[in-house]
Amino acid sequence: MSPTTPVAPTYNDDLQEKVEQLQKESTAGRVGEQNASAGAVVNNASRSDTYDYRVLPDLNKAIKTFDGCESAYEADDWLKTVEGMADLNCWPYALRMQFVRSYVVGAARNWFIGRDFANWDEFTKKFRSTFVRQLRMADRWEAMQKRRQAQDEHIMAYLQEKSRLCRALALTFSESRDYIIQGIYSKELAMYVLGRNHDNEDTLLGDLLDWTRMNAIRTEIRTEYKQEKGNSTAKTNIKSGPRRGEASTTSKPKWCSKFEKTEQVVRTAIEAGEEDKSSCWVCRKVGHWTRDCPLKKARKCFACGAEGHFARDCKSQQTVNNVTMSKEPEENPYIKYGAIQGVDMTVLLDTGSYYTLLRSSVAERCNLKLRETKKMLFGLGSVSVPSVRAVGKADVMVTVDGVEAGPIRVLVVPDSVQRYDMIVGRNWLDLDTVTYKKEG
Image (cartoon, rainbow, N blue to C red):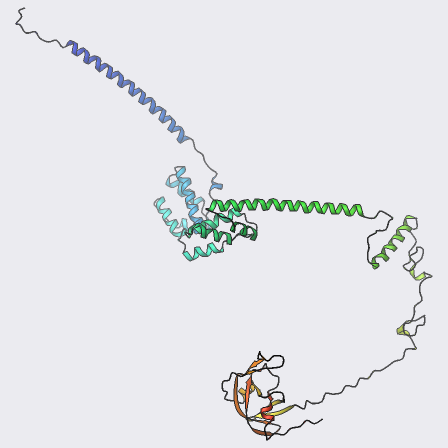
């Protein structure tokens, strides 16, 4: 072949390289697919194990029945509990509604049966609009202020509910702390926590629980101490008591000693074998009754001193009839009868009073036109504090025992001040046209 003749290229080597490269890539792809499928199997197995493993709670204890008469807070808590249980266990809509049907009673069951719900969201919306109503601010304040700790209520139960009511009102911790302390039943506990510093609710709860724990311990110690003291006192009384047959050295009243002596004599006689013999209350001896005692004193009369009869049967007692003469009180010479504008009334003449005083009810009967006055009247015992204040004054004609001396000024006082209708003073008695004297 001549050098000028062209030579065709061979592609065998390149083709061989491409085939080997393709084989390597194909092998690597198959290995990757096998690894991926193996991982998918593992993941599917683990996922299936997770879905198959369930923790089912006791629904009778986890969720209580709902009757529709609970408060808005309790109704909202019940609905959230049902929703949480349903979401956790992936309940479908039908199962959720059947569960709600099983746990509503009373008014809530009537509400549930009488309505149709397209889905769960519609049910929760209607439930909240009916049972979880928004409380007014005034109602929240009233509920918070009325919440107080009961006598036997644990401090934890009171604190948590009181704090929830305060948080619903958006109160600060300082304000909530004051309201919490106000509602504590124990005065000692309230004064203790009031003197402590608290930054948050947990520190306040810590002080409350510490004081409650220590108070319970101290109460138990006091109870045990009282029981031990009572037992020791009873033992001391038993040891220090008198022995049988010995008299007690404790001083007792005389009326007790007589009966104790008699009881001792009787007990001695019984021990000596004289059980069938009687005892005497006079000589304190055994063997005869009191009526047969030779030392018994004969009955004696307190009137004549003789023996054999009593004073009620005494013949020497004389009957005396006592006659008491009572003198009728004489008529008061200072009480007279008078009149003002034709209205009759009782009058008391009082020479120690300058003014003439008239009761307000009598002034109304006489139709007097009163003028305002600030006159103060003083009685016996004080010259600085007035006894009464006149309610009015008037100038009238006063007639006493048919004597009409002329117009005088009369002060009107309340009815409770004086007993008589009118007290005539010296402003009427000292008139020139009046002459009076005392007789008898």
